[in-house]
Length: 273
Image (cartoon, rainbow, N blue to C red; front, side, top):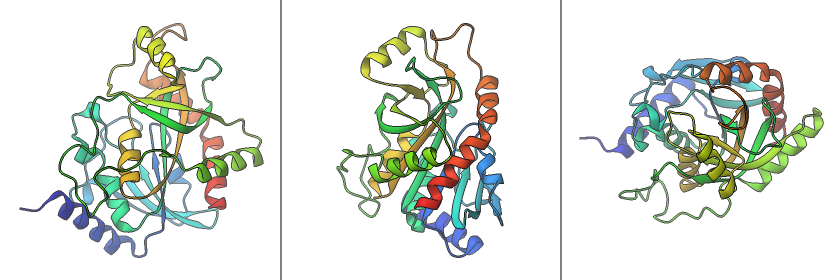
């Protein structure tokens, strides 16, 4: 019977056979943010279902494609979509793509997502750099027997999100006249949106935005020694901070509205790596 490590290596070998030389930079694109993958030229794309052992993405706004292409003269792998705790996947599946990227030799990982704004200073459509995170999912993808070939038993998380990459994001934003926010992201399991009381509690804890992804991926990436940058699009203000109910349609609509700014920011970051 194959082990998890074997399955990761199987997927990595398949991707190498399909794509050839693999770049050292990858971007994971969250809800409604997959347009960046469409901007890559020339591009080779494969559906997640075609890759051995790779879990398919089933959520609206997640195309479920792995794309290899070039942006601003730099080759990059783009993961258009991810899987989540709320879909019923376990952490091995949720972080499978990150393990594969690490085995492929990726060293710089840009994680992106949609998020609900908690900080009242934020506005709908703002882009936020993650300075740190709070794991409120309830468990951790590193729980269980440690695979030493992936990383150490007790990885340090003093700086999950690389200061160098955050600085490059600020430089890229300044160059295009974009007001880039910084903040703390709190991860929850979902799939329901948070209650107003939960949002108030998260603000007391120091969170500026809330979402249902990224943190498991960031933990696994750091376990494997990758440098990580986190970017969130504030697609809505969280419960209790805006009148009316929240919806996935609002998330997708807002992400689409800031498409040009988001792509320009990512291109500016990539050009500075």
